[in-house]
Image (cartoon, rainbow, N blue to C red; front, side, top):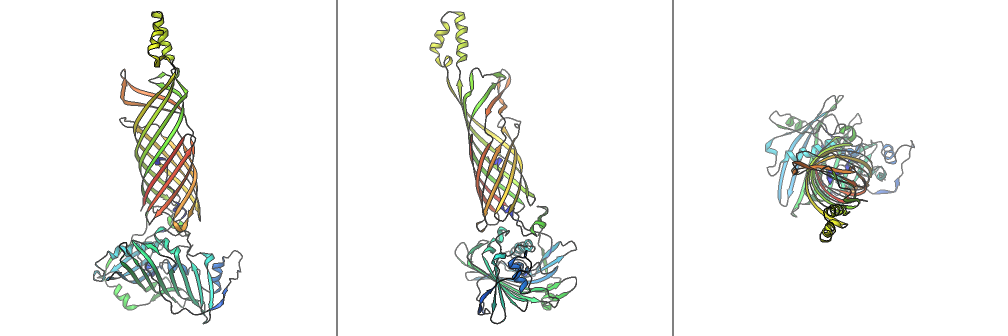
Length: 570
């Protein structure tokens, strides 16, 4: 029963961030792009530059950035422009074309950072400049939240993919791929991006991102993606985004052509030691008190310490989740004791030669929350349907007792009785079918750690059942699942192996309130012989930003089980 099973979300291996701020940032629309023929590309020399490592511990990719005098955190600007300064104002023009229908919008994004580095993000807009065909503010809020989470993304590029080519005109082309580790599900398509930075005299001039294969973005299939960033270097040496354009070309689910174009123009940068105004006219427009505002809520209470983990380039799942699971478990076991209504029946039924088979089906609803990035807690409730069959070995001793009693009364009477009622006097098997319905409630927790493709977790669940018609729950059962896993990062799929411990007691006892014998409630205490451990294998597949399906299989000496879990995170 998945009452005992915690969905393993390997995204536990990952993690991302959120805070408070009013934002504007060119990367806001990092999510909109299309192929673009770069007319500025030049012929290249024959040799690819190999990095010279000064520090043996220095990574080759970083060494290339250092060699040509640029910071190795520039790749992050392709993911998020919120890293440019503490206070930003940006202007965003957005155009959506579906077949021949075009809708256009423009807004301002404002970011402000307090002394504790909490960020406040706001959208300022004139309703007249918003497209009526879509909820533009909601789309921009979603994009801004994504950029906010990515602003501290350290593991932004794959170090092994960094290459440098010196062009004939004195420019240097530095190329790389984004790292496939740590990318959150909603921007996982960045693992398909190929990036080129144009550098001259130690200054980055531009950065171009294009996709290597189609991918899914929101509800669209994107065939081509193109993003181009033009950089501006201040006298202080600080590198900023001067202009950012992104274009996505693809199609809708109904096979209509789709094109999304976004142009982000930074208006002003404010830092403690300098103010840079790039467009005074737009800044004046953004300062109009008649402009409306929408605040972008970017921070969540849970998981605690989430920001700290995200700054290390680790993605974490969305904090809240609900899931429904179906589990079927088959068990076969021996008995050690029969006691009903306080009467010992071991002389009448031989426990060691009796066998019980149980088929249990459960449907369980669970809600969970990540308290810490590596610690999840959950509660559950559901229904269990049990079909059981007890094949009891009847010793025939009851017939012997009756036979002797009757013979004492009248010689031969007992013999005659046993001759006519053979099933009472002879040894044999007695089949007792049972059909029971239970309510189940419980709670549990999961701890997990991971590195790149590998992860480990342990889940513990404490659950209690109540036979329908009864008012009280039975004594609880502890289930533990330690697991090791491997994930296919590009496919957002995780495989795992492990074990499952079900802490079933060596007896099952209880009272059936609805059944009375001589005025007493029917009670029973039956000893059973079960193997508590079984091995476990499973797979988890993520779909889009919020959904996942998990399939588990258990096999042990006395039980076999299969579980299917459908989950939603938000």
